[in-house]
Image 1 (cartoon, rainbow, N blue to C red):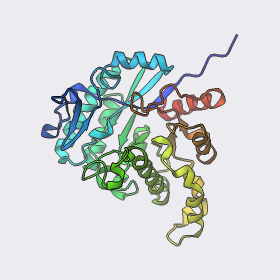
Image 2: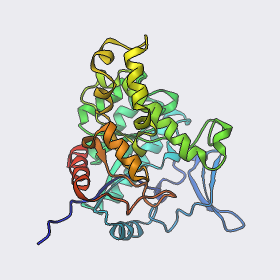
Image 3: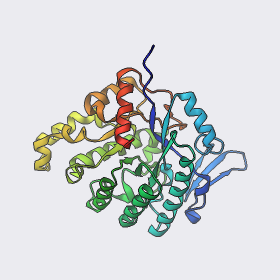
Image 4: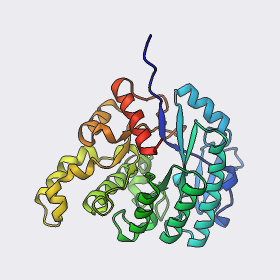
Length: 331
């Protein structure tokens, strides 16, 4: 008799909620159809054309569950759509949106125990409000984690202003998930070269995720918050490829602090969690070799343009990813 397969837990799956439409006032979000029949999704002045959220796994939970079954995914962690971080809103409006979004997402996953879990949107432009909403989301709504941008409200992740939020994450004993937004201040994205060929989604995301690794390690976040579990999307961008150069910089550059120089880059790099949504076996192996297998979790960007829903590894790595997800999510 063959051994049962380990459960497949997907930590990277975004939700688009009908109940959250218009919750940010004039900024939307607004789901609609252009006169030519093309669907659109508007967030403030940005309009995403051609993505049909209605009737897809993003919005229809029955379609999602059927697609999960087809892909062999047992449990999925739902997160906010990165387009709707709304970090440019006034703090009171962002807080109201986050509460409405989190209430709706918690209600959705509550109807499907054992299949769906939820992470919370935070109004990061107001750290005190973020801490309060984090506590409400975890303690009152039962959410299993928190979700922020790689540069929340224009701050780098090592900005000391974020320390009260990190302290709350540790106190709540939940993971913090970090995922870039495709929105630059002038549209996607600030660098006009990234507006070609969807490079804002490919190179732009990897750029932001690599900067996030640098901020967490070089900026001392993991020294200041040793109990913090933070998980970066898409394998942490290009950090695995650059890890040798990062390590050499720690050995050679004058700005490196005492603790970082004494412990080395890998000591901190291997404390960060990463999802495995990298699309390539050699890229995944590079991530395993440099970041280590014990902080990797399976992620798919489920139903997205680059979805890897059926790409879960087999063998020993599958077992490792399953046990890692249980640790990260406190299952």
